[in-house]
Amino acid sequence: MEPSSLWQWVVYLVVGGIAGWLASLLMRTAHRQGILLNIVVGIVGGFIGGWLLPMIGLSVGGGWLGFLVTAFIGAVILLAIVNLFRR
Image (cartoon, rainbow, N blue to C red; front, top):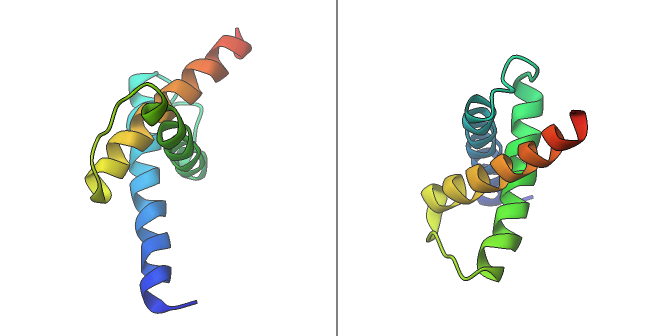
């Protein structure tokens, strides 16, 4: 693995973790989640947002800020779906 690709993975983990944490604060699930679950929710949210947003015609731009916004929106959607099944 090249150093630049390793660095990108680290950035994805950090930005995904931030997006998952922010989404858990918004959805009031932060008390049930730890840092590892926040990272997973943020990264899965990035995939969901990256798949869903273009389908509905939205684009948030590129770079780490675009990934943060996309991952945040996807993480909120993911947590909303999880909350529906928990009730």
